Length: 266
Ligand code: ATR
Image (tube, rainbow, N blue to C red; front, side, top):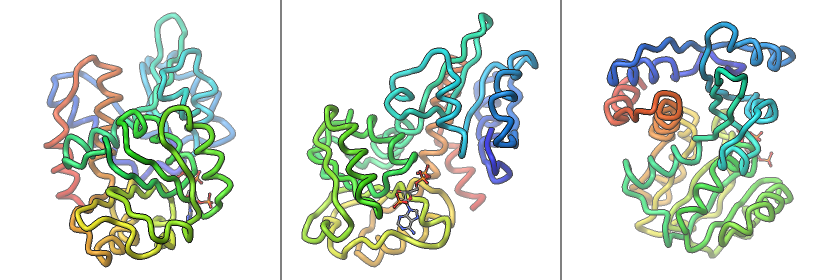
């Protein structure tokens, strides 16, 4: 469920998962009028729907309508995965952060533990992944955002969970990171955050949570900085979907062939 939704690759991904695991599943993209979200949501179980993925702009609203919530959704204050029970319960989970961590550490072999991590952005995307990133035990996690106050609020909200700090873009000058994760939406408008030069360590990595052309402004900057280890969010997209599928079906699909299939399409 989202608005817009036509671009969504999730039906393709879940169809591949279902085929692979022999699960009978019908998964469709649903365009929802923002004024109708709650009504549409609470009617879904009566149509036989057992679960839903939620994307922009409904993740916070979906969380509010849930009757039980998983830890990651509670921390994020937002849900990307809902499960409907026969007894009328709506459970909210958030698999975005787990998906990012799985792609970084498992698929791409980029360590988070003991690394100096810069998270760029302080909107819903950044909030959704912050808890799982801190769970990995980074040496340092700095949040930088165009509106510094939002970075400050986010850092304050998570400071109990790990070594999180905030900075303005300018104040990053002279610092060095092993991993920079772009969680801004700037790339969707062909733009990028004005990060200072020289802040990625020579063996460091850059990751954009957006997949496809929207990742290019940030990843092109990373290439100019001499960073060889660069990735867009295709793996995160598939891994968060695999976490949702596992919640619903109790079986974890193999993500590698799905990531490869998506990459062949772009
Ligand atoms: P999302 O849920 O996708 O994170 P959001 O909550 O609207 O969406 O947050 C968008 C993020 O991208 C914010 O961190 C925003 O910075 P501000 O908090 O200063 O608005 C960031 N962003 C969007 N366009 C940007 C740009 N051109 N340059 C830098 N940051 C940008």
